[in-house]
Image (tube, rainbow, N blue to C red; front, side):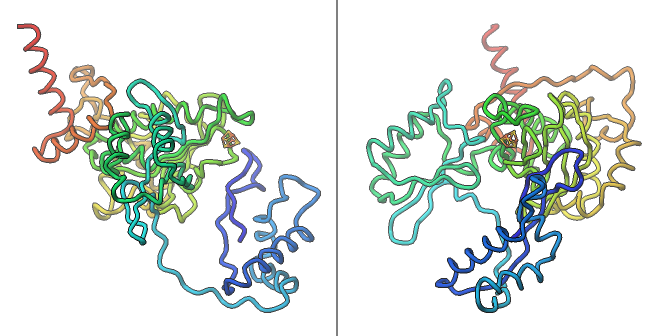
Length: 386
Ligand code: SF4
């Protein structure tokens, strides 16, 4: 109990908070316990100050022991101590899975929760065709994906065909992982509370982060990115390894240090990062991460949490970029003036499936994606000009 994301900029008395474990009850008691919790909030929650009205502030002010004791008064008996659970693991259930009774379920990734048709990418039409033909039940997941279930194995091939024809990637490994684990709230133009862009801005930002990671020799790296257009935090940016929270039009508060499983609160690192300075802002932090991570398994969020913001700031203020030269060995060294501008890189958009194939080829051949794409383009351009 007592978890919540919403907060207000520059009002330190409002904050994101992790829930506290309250205890354990048998299934038959769940409803009565919920009534007791709601009654506690009804009678003791702040009814005067709207910014302080949420139950998380009651938990914060009281502590979980006092809260539990009060709930027990309404519940009419003691709440048993919490039973330990297996460690929480983030799962998005994408791709084909067995549902346990012989039937299947299929998780489909929906980038930023937007079901749409755009060029060859026809998700809306594909879902409509599948629904018309198979009338399958559908779940919307907490990570804005769609899960179709009660699928008979005999229907699998036809469903795959529809999705493939409509340009939908259903192999989880084929989805760019930065995209797969990212999430944005709708913000502008849908939400009247938005201060900055979110759903429309995140895809471009994620693409730029991928280019930067590749440039820094971190091609295999990915982490949880979240963006919201205001501090209400609808896309849970405060649990992300890299969270962007709109603070002014085109500017974002940046949160660092959440965990890959999204079980730890991140912390605000800067207040107003201009979107156009994303690379300048992130490069030194990512280079520090690359150089100082404890193991190859240490995630970006875990790294930021372990070393702390003081260490990150200390590193970044003395950092001199060499990455613009496109040479990994030069990263972190001062750029030579005469070289700046040589080997400058440009961005090209790729379809998800092409990106996945390029990535697989790069891994197989031990080359970077840029090398393979450059070789292929050079060969193609030579062919059409001869
Ligand atoms: S987080 Fe996004 S969707 Fe939520 S209120 Fe703010 S702008 Fe609107």
